[in-house]
Structures are given as C-alpha cells and as structure tokens.
Length: 442
Ligand code: UGA
Image (cartoon, rainbow, N blue to C red; front, side):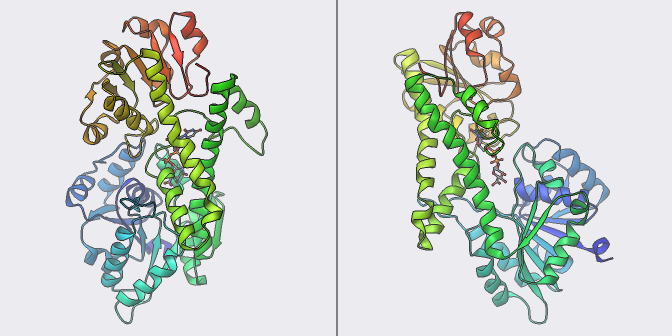
C-alpha cells in the first residue's frame, strides 16, 4: 500500500506547520519539516518547541528521537524527498490594508515547484483568499520542472491554539478541495486513519474548500460579537449577560459555545481573517455581502475601549495609577499575544499614564517583546502587591480560581475589572470589592 511509503513534508513550522508535522509523524508517516529560519530548524531538530502548545513538545520529542520527524531549511532536500507537501506558512494582514499578505504562500509554492524532482502533490493548509488555489496552480505550472507531475489541492486547517494536537488528530471534519480524483485518493490515504476513526471528510472544489475556512471563522467572530453587542445593551439597561447567553445557548440551534461576552476576540486568526475576507469580497465585487463583518470588527474593538473607560471611572484619573494586569495572551493555554485584546488594553492604559504590571502564565515573554514599556512579573502576588486596580483579562484557570479572601491578603486594592466575566461578582462585592465587567451595568 502506498500509505506506508508516502513521505510527507510540511513547509513552514509555526503554530500550524509544527503541529501538522508532529501529528503526521504520530500517524505513522516519515515527515520532513521546512522552515526558512535556521534558528527555528535548529531548535525543532533538538526537539525544542519555540512556542507554548499543550501536548506538542512531547509529540515533537518522541518523533524527533525516533527519527521519523526531521527538519531542514533546504527546498532541494524537500523537493527531492517528499510525495505530499503541505504548506502551512503564514498569511498575515498586509500592512495598512485588510487584505492578506500572500508573499509567503507564493514564495513557498514557487520554491517547492522549482525543486520537486518526482511526481508530487502540494496541499495548501494556510488560510487564503478564495481563488488562491487556482492562481497557485498556474504558478506551479510556470515553475515546475518538465516531466514531473505536480498538482495542487487545498486542505484548510481548523485547529485552535491550545488544542492544536487534539484538533489535528481528531478534528470535527476534514475538508479537501481538489480538481482530480487521483489527488482526492492521495488525500484520503493520508487521512485514512482519521477517517476510519469516524472523522467526516468533505471532498469538494477549490473555492468551496477555501471558503469553508473563512466562513467558519467569520461565523465564530460573529457569534462572539453578537453576544458582545448585547452586553452593550445590558451595560445600559441592566440584566445579566451570562444568564442571557446560557438561556439562548440552550436552544440547540444556537448553542452555548462562543457566546462568552468579554473583551472580544483576538489572536492570529479571527481578526485578520474577517478583514481579509472583506477585502477579497470587495475585489470580487461582493463587498456588500460581507459588510456586516465591519460591524463585527467594530463591536469587537469597542470592547477594548469599554475596559479603558471602566478603569477610568473606577480610579478617576489613570495618570500614575498602578494597574495589575492578569493575563495578556489572547486566550488561556497560549503564549500568543498577536492582536491580543488584553495587551492592547494594557497599552492603551499606559498611553494614558497608568503604570502597568503584567503577569501571564505563558505570555510574558512575547508580550514584553511587543510592549516593552510595561513591567512584567512572575506571579499574581507580585502583580497585585502595589496595585490600585486589578484587571483580569485572560481567563487562565489560575485567575478563574482567585477568591476575594485570597487576593485581599495579597493587595490593598479593592477594585477589579473582570474582563472575561469569570468571577462571581456578588461574592467579591460582599467581601468589600468593587467589581466591574463587560456586560454589567456599572
Ligand atoms: C480560531 C478558530 O477557533 C479555529 O477553528 C481556527 O482554526 C483558528 O482560529 C485559525 O483560523 O487558525 P484560535 O485563534 O486559536 O482559533 O482561538 P479561538 O479559541 O477561536 O479564540 C479566538 C478569540 O475569541 C480569543 O481571543 C478568545 O478569547 C475569544 N473568544 C472566544 C471570546 O471572546 N468569547 C468566546 O465565547 C469565545
């Protein structure tokens, strides 16, 4: 059976690529990961993961040790060795525009095509504007060596940071966009173990596959902004946003997940994906259809302003106020601070003269690189010690477990903003704390 001998390569070893490479090795394949950053390749080759992702370091070490998983900077090596080449490089937001920067995907595809010396399939995983696969097919055709068959397929990735390994090994669904039955067969073989385990595989055309990914993220972003829009209403009229979410969430058609009101969505995907989708729709003359996403983005950014406003109301003037920020990662179980609402709020408060002291269980290092103006400490206790006001901005378990008694022993502050609506406000107020949170009248 071909499966036994199929050699997998993964181009780009960021969150997506490193996870995919390690998981493909876990599925039994020989895998070669490529990154243009020699430092990253050196670190991964020693089994060291340069970012935080639960379960991934163990998988990486296991398969680097067994020799099933290797890393390189050489396209020549990858092109001569692999049968199926996954592309997992980034598609960041283009500077000064909403559209996606496709330069990494284009460069990876071109380099692959030039270096592939035997029949192979290139499979894109990155989140891309609809129409990309078709465009890249021409790029491959122009750059590939004569006599070798190199085709292209798209297989969007739906993993969540913090759950990357489980999401990759046991996804809700697999989606493949193909234009030939042979390529579909190859991808079905690649994912045979998952499919045998009951994972639905949807095989479709390029455009649908590309759109499934952005539609899913647009829906999730909309769901979060929907509840956050209602939190703007309860802030004015009163009412309990969490109970509202629980109650509508019990309708199976709606569902409770992604209805947590708070400081809004961030991270390397949702914010940039909805902007890229709008930009692409505009290029296609369908701008009106995606215009509602403007509103979702707007609601999302207003949540950050709301926290700054609440801080101002709670302490009077922000100038010289000492603020402890608990959590800067864009979500718990991650060290990622890309487009983190928490870090943005800290920056805005600092701009108004507040002194910020930050503690995040995993995000301190990345945050300090982006926003070196703040003070970073290694525990909640050190963060809150001299604070006038405390902000809980990422719902790590250790922050959710905070109690008014416990925290009162560590600080003289009696003011807290619960940005993620995870504390029982009543208990804190009974203990003499003043509590504000998004969605609550204050
Ligand atoms: C998201 C999607 O959930 C994945 O399916 C997708 O594959 C990924 O983007 C991607 O495109 O690569 P991720 O960015 O890891 O995954 O994070 P999410 O768990 O979706 O959270 C996104 C943001 O929404 C976080 O800032 C989180 O705090 C916020 N959020 C989430 C809320 O504010 N409320 C909620 O109820 C849920």
